Amino acid sequence: MRLWRLGWAALLWLALFPTSAHADELRPAYVELTEQAAGQWSLLWKASANSRLGQTGSIILPENCVAQGEPSRQFSGGNILTSRTLACDGRLEGQRIGLKALELSTTDALVRVAPLQSDMQTLRLTPDAPVTLIARPSVISNVAATYTIIGIEHILLGFDHLLFVLALVLLLKGGWLVAKTVTAFTIAHSITLVGSTLGYLSLPSQPVEAVIALSIVFLAVEIVKARSGDIRLSERFPWIVAFLFGLLHGFGFAGALAEIGLPQGDVPMALLTFNLGVEIGQLVIVAVGLAILALIRKFQGQWLQPAKTATAYGIGIIATYWFVERMIA
Image (spheres, rainbow, N blue to C red):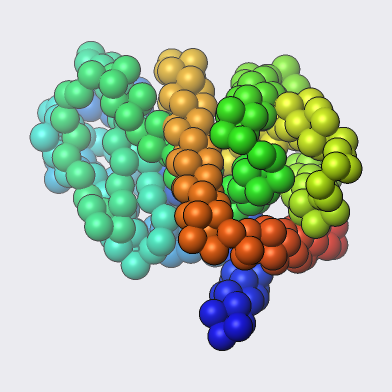
């Protein structure tokens, strides 16, 4: 009983902890250096208005570049957009670029460098490595690696998508059924992600985010009400339910990508590898969830259903909070 109480305490902590943050917190800063003419570069960087990364003095410029004039700053969608003109003596390859405040942050930053006479490259800054060297990597491999990592991080750190996949694992019985259902979810969110990113589909973000929270509440209720011999809608047609909700989650992914930014000229590769990263992250969640359930079933089988029910209540509480928060925001 003591262990069971500890489990409930842990579940309560899980229910309360994510409520202090937005479910889609993957909002790294974005820095873009574009050569306009020989030696003349335009600098643009975007960062959340609530972070230090948008401060004028936070960016570390290449040593052979000098900023000209005053920076232009504007607010857009909760972000600060800052632009400057740089005069650079020679090439930027081998020079450093970074963000000073990043080491005090919990997010990452993307850097896109687009010279006129050489390949564009996409670099990634982290709190552990806030400064990097501008080199000459392969454009495709660089973009692919960067956006694959972003996709993995988004599904693992974007709590609403994570809880939706976890709820599917708790609801369905059998690894193969879970795999097919998660695949339907992936196909659906890929459709709306690509369509929204390319401008073919559009929905206002606030109701979409609210309905995404409701989709998690729906699955939590289905888990709690599941009974042996009483097959519910989500158990009878799980891939259809996952596909329909996946269409909405795709708009959520698109919103996160819009915050991050996409490298012009490499949008297809970025979208493909972001989706690949999301799928990898989903498979990690499924594997870990199934492994934990298998261990409980093997060593403490009588705890399996109570553990599922308790976890479903925790997931439902979190998702309900998100729904209310998003409706009144």
